[in-house]
Image (cartoon, rainbow, N blue to C red):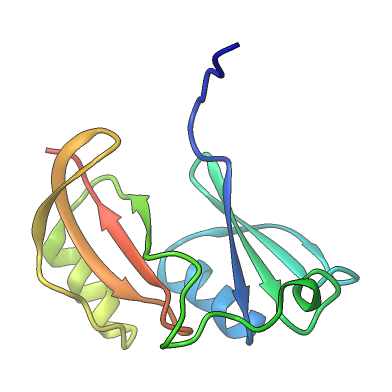
Length: 134
């Protein structure tokens, strides 16, 4: 049997400071709180048709996986959020006004082909790619 994959459902980030990360993803990047499960140490954020889960490393789920990623060890290289419309100048201005350092604009390949792309770091140094379409 061959699976029919529709897309990514969610990514899970193991984090130290859930409140700070939630503020970044909601207030800076525009995600919306989907639900919270404090007993598990889990916050789920809506990112378009997918979710970004924030798991507190000190919470019930988080303790099962050890420490969160560090500068010398990651559990992923980066993840990419599709942004539309993609106005690189407006995105850069917004992010920099929020204190976020923005990488160089480049054309990169993704699920929908080539498109403009910017890299940023979240508050716990996970790399997030923001990508538009050509």
